[in-house]
Length: 148
Image (cartoon, rainbow, N blue to C red; front, side, top):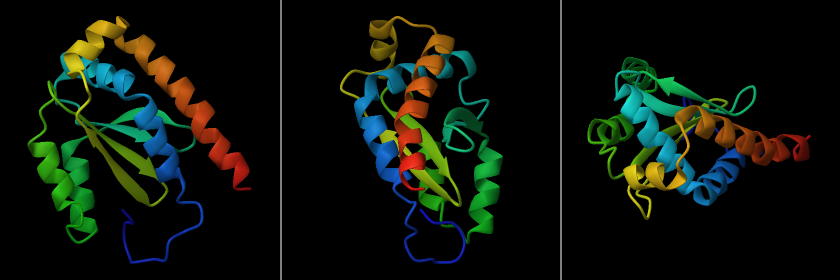
């Protein structure tokens, strides 16, 4: 979703496709991480985000910041706010991909529930964060170098 004025499709927007592929290939790990972070913090920190700048890493997106952004972009995030309000962490994974001047909703129901994924993988949250951030840097960095 482009934020601000309607602009033509930028040539470096393929980060969305790269992120989609990453999510598809790492659904179980992302579901496990989502559940582990939910157990630690609930929704007190906000929605989990994947910030792609300067290198891919996980962040929290507080609800009030998303609402503020929604107001600045003429309520174009209203649907995302509705999904966040109705999020069921025991069944679904909800994250926000953050690229330059764009965000992308990451929202899916894994084959196994997030609690089951967390139990099956058997890693703690810090190990999952490290594993996924390393994998994202490897997969998504290829996009950055190939576009130069």
